[in-house]
Length: 193
Image (cartoon, rainbow, N blue to C red; front, top):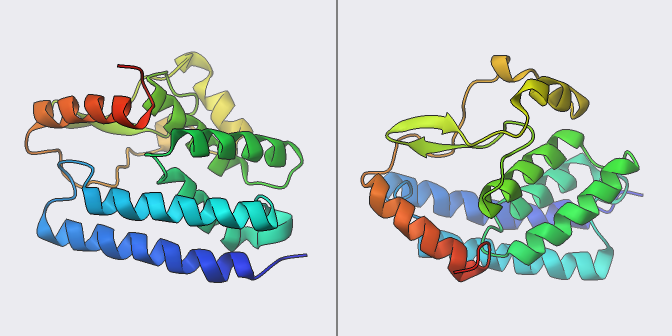
């Protein structure tokens, strides 16, 4: 049975995320670093989602519906300052996907995102980042098998997928951003210093 509470509670959280993102974008300061105000919202949203999960179980298609799952997935994808939370959600999503209770394409995106933050090659080619002013895919494991893996997750072939990035321009100071990113990875626990 679908519980409408998922959509009701999570829609508000995702809307706060979008409002802050739009505000930072308008100010021209979203693209150059992970802004503290954005991180604050992401941390608060992941904490609230974690509380909902403790009270209602993990949001899957059979209990949260497609919209509830997509809203929760977006919060999980943005919980980048909470590696343990993201990894636990990935574990739960893998189980649910194995039971046909979670969209495989969303699983693929989370798998690649976590691989990126852990410094591992991605499996499905969904992750990209700026490198020398050019948007490029982050390293991919077994490039020869990428389209078969993508197909198994309901994704189109890599050759037909344009590069996407939530930031529409490269950072003003790529070197500074890269250094800050490495410090941040250690600070939040993705990497050991």
